[in-house]
Structure formats: structure tokens, C-alpha cells
Length: 266
Image 1 (cartoon, helix red, strand yellow):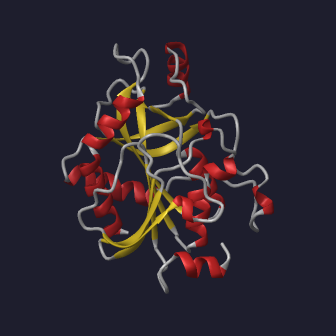
Image 2 (cartoon, helix red, strand yellow):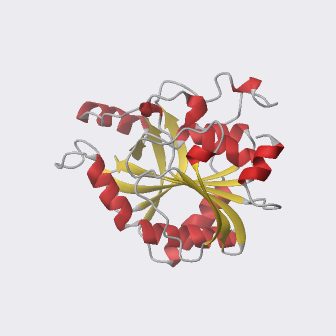
């Protein structure tokens, strides 16, 4: 982002340390957040506005647990018809703002039969089944190696912190593998069985492109997924976005509580 635009949009001398991207139905509910600026995505040059319900499209700047943070309320999904360059717009802005640590949240469907609605899953690895990659063509945007090593794309140290805090709060939590698909249709029973064989614990339509872009930019990443529905064949109930939003709102307070404690521990 050009310097004059940064000065115009963002508070003077404010350099956030931590970025947080919130998923479907996960709104503004941080009790300890002190907001100093609210910026609609529409006001940020080059940004597109989310079309998916539950994604307001707003950037909050402020302090949380005495740390300077940038909280992105909503993200762009590949299924909305935008190119990957726009899908990872929040991550690229995080890099421009000087953020070093990125916390990503997402609403997911559970494949693992031991998981329950409202459960938190710390992502330890992922499977990219979206059929594309955000680094295609990105080398022209910044200096760096397109062939990014993804061996430990989710910070082991941040995973340990998240698991310890959640257990201390007596939250139901697990460590699992996220499988990302393009969407927007939900998966069939046969697809779910196939992804189980591949080792996936949860399914979603986001996060993974952002993680890949974040690692390309050298950001440390923590992925937190909230189980908002059970996948086809795991439950007799049919999948719906209304259910995802309802569950996301129901459990957003415990989720933001753990995020606030994680921020304090970083």
C-alpha cells in the first residue's frame, strides 16, 4: 500500500503486531478490545467487499490484551467468484501493515465423528482440495520464493499456547487437519468418506489460501476452527449456511475469550 494512502486510512504511528481474521458469524464481541479506528473494506483501495452473509467487511484497529491488533471482520471466499488475489487481500494488507503474527478463524463442518457442535479445533495441518493456489503469479507482487515450504505452516508454538489456554478454560478442544474445498455447495457423503481416508478432520471453504499467502509473506500462523455443523453422512441433519451462522454466533464469546488470552500470551 502506498505511504500516502496508509497515512490517510490508518492512525498515525499505529503499527499492529497481531492480525485476526474472523470467519462466518463471528462478529465483534471482544470484551477487552479498545477500538481506535473502524475502516470499511470499501474504503480500502483495491479491496472488494464480501458478499457472503455473516461477513460484515470491516477492519477494526485497536488494542487487545495490551497488544496492537488489526481485526478483519469477514473474508472473501473463492466461491464468490473473485480471483485468489482478492481472496487473500486481508493477508496482503496484514503484511503491508507490518503484522508478524496472524490468527485465522473459520466455521467448519466436522468429519471426525468424535467432534461436537461448538467445539474448537486447533489446526495442525491442512489439505488444499480447492484446485488452485494463491501463489500463482504472486512472485510479481513481492520479492520472495514462490516455492514456499509448508512443512510447519501452522506454528507449533502457537498451537501449544492455544491448546493450553483452552484446556485451562475447560473448553472442548482438539487438534485436527483442515481440508479446504472451493464450495459453495456442501460435500456429498461419498466425498466426505474420501476426505476421511485422506486424513481430514474438518471441512471448510476458506483459511487455507490465506495460510499459504501468509507463509509466503513470512507471517507466523495460528488456525482456529469452530465446528458449526456435522458433514454429510456424519449427521442425519442437512447442511445449511443458516445453521453455520447460528452456531457461530452462539459460540463466538468463548472463541473470542480464548483468542484474547492467546493474544496476551504471544
